[in-house]
Length: 127
Image (cartoon, rainbow, N blue to C red):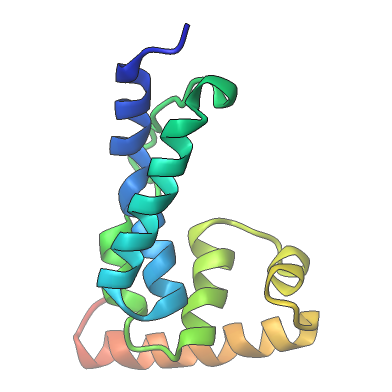
C-alpha cells in the first residue's frame, strides 16, 4: 500500500524542479507553477500505479531556483535546450528528439546559450 507520506515526499523533492522546467518552457513562473500543480494533482490520482518516489540526497543535485535565475536571460528555445541538456542531463540526440529539431540545431542553440550565459555571468561578476 502506498502511503500519503510517500507522495508528499515526492512532491517536496520534485515540485521545484518541475516548476523550473515549466518556466524554462513558458518563460512565465506563474504558468509554470500552475502546470506543476496540475501535474502533481494528476499524479496523485494515479499514485497507486506509480509506486514510490525516493528523494535525491546528492548535494550537487540540480538546484531549480538557481537554474531559473541563471537561464532567465536566454530566449525561450535556448532556455529549454540548456535545461534539458545541462539541467536534466539529456544527450543531444534526446534533446533534439524532444524539441523536434535536428542535432545541429541543438548544438547551435547550446553554443549560443553558452556565449550568452558567459556574458551574463561576467556582467554579474560570477565566476
